[in-house]
Length: 178
Image 1 (cartoon, one colour):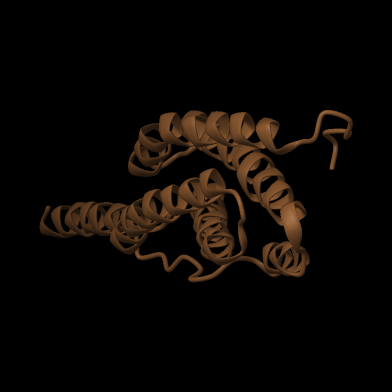
Image 2 (cartoon, rainbow, N blue to C red):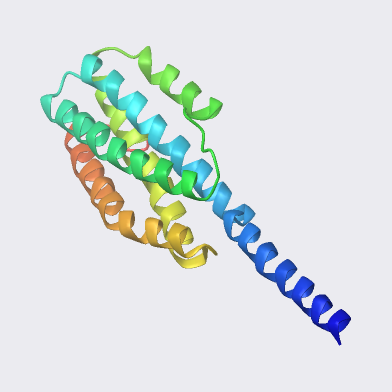
């Protein structure tokens, strides 16, 4: 009887401690979400810092400052969430995102404002909204899902603001598919 009790106790211990260890591990899709969300945020902040110095339109500079402020807050929360899950997210944009920023960095005149708003305002936010929508539906970790759901409304507002501002920058006789 003592041997059976010890076996059951050992099994219970393995199950309990095994479950606790797994609670710290994130599903691969949740890690991918945190990674992409971090990179997207860093790309937005980096390009927006550039826009503060290069943009000619004051409304573009106001938008850029808002992106820096908002994404810094989200990044701090993402970093805290990731740390609680024992995951370290990237601290900079992806190589592709860096390349896109380099392309717009060399633009002058009003074309910088248009490209920044199109690439980092509209396109980047379209991608990020899709990313957060998917995570708010499909994330396995409840904290990751809650994080995505919490920030989705603000990201949608960023996208709307970017589309509205970008539309004002496009000359009437120019194709908007720049």
